[in-house]
Image 1 (cartoon, rainbow, N blue to C red):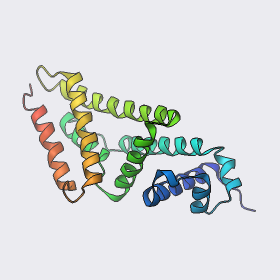
Image 2: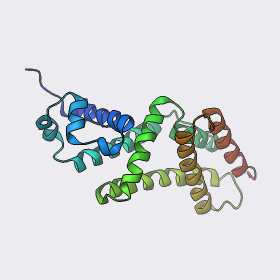
Image 3: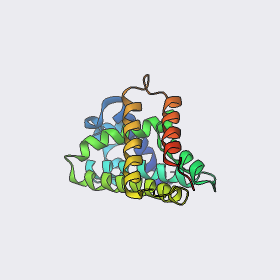
Image 4: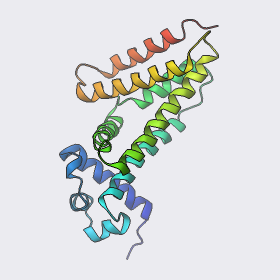
Length: 195
């Protein structure tokens, strides 16, 4: 009998959750449905996740970790403006993989409003994203006279969230090219008073 890699099995289960959520909605992501989607028995799935809450929390954390890993893997960029644009575009759902992450994130966002365990994980993701926005704005602050870092962090975070929602809801109206243009214009306006 082949030895099962627990981390790979958890990753496979996360992918199964994503498929169920994207196809049938988050309410369909029961242990039974996810086990069936993953080709596992319910007992096998419960070996890795004791409850639906644990399964969903792990899945939401996986979304956050995937995004963090992608950002960390970006090539080094010494120019703060170009670095900011590269990171921001990586955070937006501009290709099928990131669109899937965004769909799952948005489904979990609604559920987190009424599920305290998911709320905790979701809030951690929110804080990570806001912290990333803050680091980008801090990087630009050295280039711009009188930049209100807190306000610009909030503006940038809101811009990202708004673009992600609009792209998910109306991809025909907000195309990837248009989203890129909006990000570039925002950064241009932010840095137009460079030192």
